[in-house]
Amino acid sequence: MESAYAVDTVMFDKTGTLTTGQLNITNVLPINSAAYDEDTLVQIAASCEAESEHPLARAVVNYAKAKNIALNPVSNFTVR
Image (cartoon, rainbow, N blue to C red; front, side, top):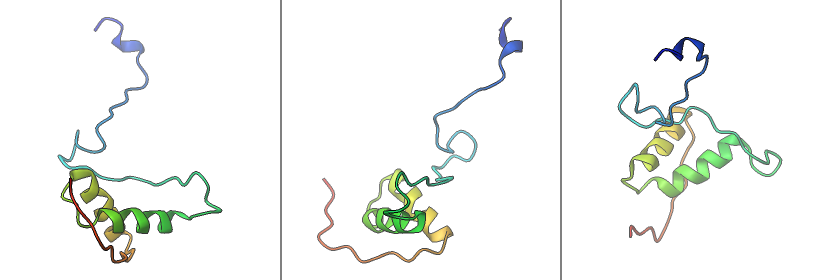
């Protein structure tokens, strides 16, 4: 505690759960935007995750919905 006065940065790896109690996507940074833009990447990921009940999947789908990105149908989805 004595050296805390010198701290100028604190990082939390909690993806939104620290303050809101739920996972949230804050931004998407495509590695190769020439291949896929942000909306296309979000559409693909959210479409694949739409049937999943996992909290991370819900965060991806909610991000797509908030950006009004339509999801594509996915067939043969299974949970293991």
